[in-house]
Amino acid sequence: TETKYCVKQFKMNILKNNWYTESCDMWPGGTFSFEVKEILHQEKSPYQDIIVCDTTSFGRVLILDGIIQCTEKDEFSYQEMLSFLALCSHKNPEKVLIVGGGDGGVAREVSKHPKVKEIVQVEIDARVVEVSKKYLPYMSVGFNSEKLTLHIGDGFEFMKNHSNEFDVILTDSSDPVGPAVSLFQENYFALMKSALKPNGIVCSQAGTFWNDLDLVTNTLKYCRNQFPVGAYAYTSVPTYPSGLIGFVLGSLDPDVKFDSPQITFTKEEERAMKLKYYNSDIHKAAFTLPTFLRNQLN
Ligand code: SAM
Image 1 (tube, rainbow, N blue to C red):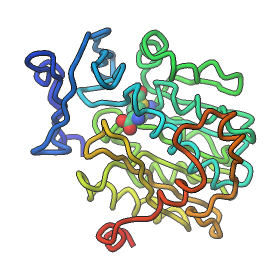
Image 2 (image 1 turned 60 degrees about the vertical axis):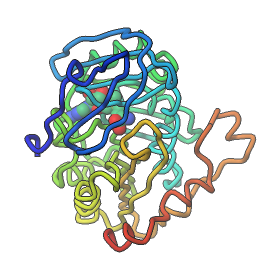
Image 3 (image 1 turned 90 degrees about the vertical axis):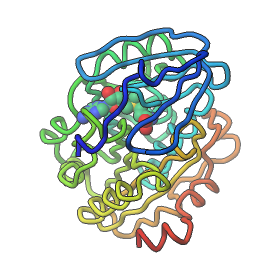
């Protein structure tokens, strides 16, 4: 719930001698720190504290309400895997909805997929989009796609007014604090199910199993309560807590096997799409879970 997590403010987190330490009750007793070269931007939007800083080892970093959202060094792992695990599990992902994703990185990846014709994105905070356009151009380039229509609004509310419309829904949400709390609940999975066309697929950011096994377990349970097929996958992102992040995927097609992609790209296609992390082998591997997690989730 919203009160479970008490995020410390950036000012309390920032450092002595230019070291920023990200501490949060979602991962108690441990922290990640990085050296800051310069704070490029800092504001309080109607929804959250927004910070962009330049760092010595991770390039530019976007921080919302004190939590790292993406860094220039490793963002491609998250953006590519969130997008392509779902897109390549669908035979014909023509129309895609992105919820959240205010930095533009997921839109950048989705727009590369040759079968995608139309992308709709709903992001709650226009300021994240504007700040990203100014300071994070390598991600916000996604907003230039001719396939994309961007709405500013709440993804949960948006979903209530759409049915039978999308082939794939990607939820590129911040952690379940503040405006993103609703995106981790079972009724959100029920709304996504109605917004999908037959055989549609969802993929949501779903936390890391080292730090919040309850969050992972519950999000997958909510998904499986609504979808005939549900699975958890994860990818390596060194600047996220515990160095990885997971995704919950659900499919309305009962025959989908998430660890066996429906669409595979040749090496030439991977190069042309400038994929740096995703390939068919890593797609399959992402669903292979350690024993304790497999026992917990299955
Ligand atoms: N990769 C990041 C991560 O996992 O930490 C997520 C990045 S993206 C910047 C997250 C976005 O979700 C933010 O821009 C935030 O404003 C947006 N967001 C949060 N709650 C939302 C909601 N209810 N509807 C739409 N967008 C939302």
